[in-house]
Image (cartoon, helix red, strand yellow):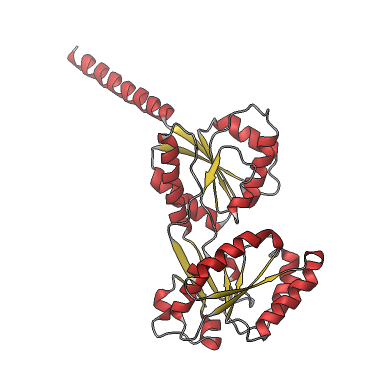
Amino acid sequence: MRKFVKATARVIAVTSLLLANQAFAESVDNILVLMPDSSGAKSALVGLQEEVGEDLNLITQYVDSSTSVEDLSNFFKSSSPKAVVLMNNPTVNLYKKYQASLDPATKHPPALMMMASFLRQTSSGVQNGTGINYEIAAITCFVGLRNILDQPIRRVGVIYRDVFDDFINEQKAMAAQEKIEIVAKRLNTKNVKTSLKKTIKSLTKSDEVDAIWILNDNVLLNKNLLIKSWLPALKRNEKPVLVNVQSLVSSKFRFGSFAVLPDHTALGVQAANLLFDLQENDWQVGDKELEEPVAIEKVLLVPFAKKYLKLKENALDQIDVQVD
């Protein structure tokens, strides 16, 4: 009889534990993460997962060019998320279409956008949205480069489209504080391909600038312009080229030689803390503005730098990623 009582007690204890765990799982808020299948996004996801732990339930769905508005609708129906995380420009743009497909009176969960270039413009039209900017301020890039070189960085050239007039003016004002002038070349948008190639060559061949800064502009960095304009024009370039995407710093082709970009894992941690802030605010964005990245990585194309640039003695100690 005593054995039966003990066995019954154990069953009750195990059952109670299972029910408690189930109740706990049901009480944890779901977060839908829509992301591309890329190394940068996966690094951000690692930081996000590690920081939220078991306090939030992350439901991950990969998004690519074949993902439809109907797919997004199914993702939301199956997860009933308290918030959605959107990684990269195509994902944000697809989410806009999803929101537009719903009844105007629909209440949307907060959307946390990240890893999307020029987020202030890209996020326009997203309802109940906030996020983290992906661009690093130009002055951070310029000073980072200047700190590793034993040569002057006084004037930096940049090529841009007219939609970025305000952004360029903001960057000019910040750069001036470090006595660095941005030499801005606005493109003729009627014939981008021809004017782009000519403008790049003029910057690489003249003494007008000490370095070239390339905006993370998806229009100017599309595959066609990369092949037809950028790569031919930069083929014999010996000036440092600053980019904001690590993949553009490669030994396989001469393009970017120095990059400053957000640390993607730290970006995930920052996103997690932003989610906790939203949770405390009853999942309302309110007047929360876009945040700036809190941690950066410096990338250097070492063979190019050693051949064409004058590196300071401790230069490589300041570099997070060395591309050989």
